[in-house]
Length: 120
Image 1 (cartoon, rainbow, N blue to C red):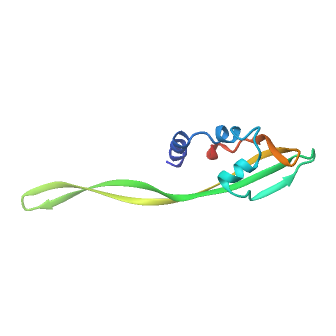
Image 2: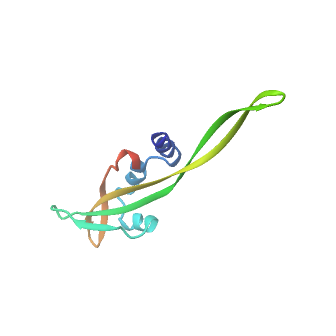
Image 3: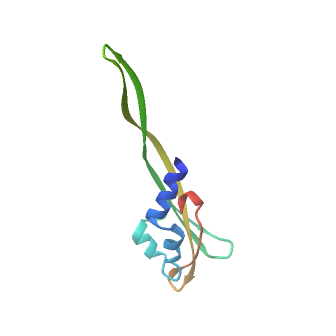
């Protein structure tokens, strides 16, 4: 059930990698304007920077359940049908990383790390 939900979210929201690819060649401030301040910024060995955003998605998935019962009465038996819905909570934490090189005063996005499959 969880895998199906994640698969549906991928098709409905689009591919995160495609969104991240759209920032390549632009100042990292473009991503900041869209998603706020990064949760982590680190300097890499080659002098570039990695900017990371941690995004947590939480909610509940509805799980419908159908039940049947046989009812006995003076006139014979009958089958009764019922349906109930329970909710299963979920929480997904995804980390998105853009890398950037300094060009003058600006940091220009030169790449990204592909997020794990559940975050695509």
